[in-house]
Length: 179
Image (tube, rainbow, N blue to C red; front, side, top):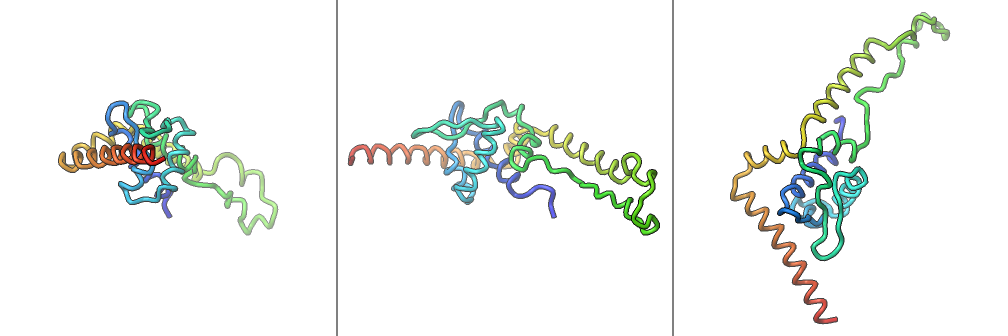
C-alpha cells in the first residue's frame, strides 16, 4: 500500500496547469478536470483543500477559477501532500516490545524505557522523506515538465485552455441574448 494516494498526484498535476496559466490568469477546476479526464467534483474537492491550505485562491465569474496563492518557488510538494492528505506518519509504533510472552502480562520497566530503536529509525526515515518533499517545489516540477513535454504539446495545452475560456464567454453572451 502506498503512503500517499492518487489525490496527491492529481493535486500536483492540477497545480502545474494552474501554474502555467497566462500571467494573472486563472484556471477553472472544471477545465483542469476535463483536460486530465478526471471527475470535476473530485478536482473541485482537491482545489478546496488546497485553497484552505493557502496554496490557491479562487475567483468567481466568467473568467474566474484558481490561481496560485504564492509563487511557484514557495509551494513545496510537502505543502501539497499536507493540504490534500494531511499529515500521515510513515510508521505507527505499536509498542510490540511490551508484549513478550516472558513478561506474562506485566512488562518490566526497562521494556518500555526510551524510544524503541525501530521506532527511532522510522522517525528518522519519516523526517528525511518530509525534508525531501519540502525541498522540491512547484517551480522545479514545472521546469522539469517544460523540458520533457514537447513545445508543440505545451502550446496545444495552452490553446486548449484558452479555447475553453473563450467558449464560456460565448455561452454567457448567448444566454444573455436569449434571456
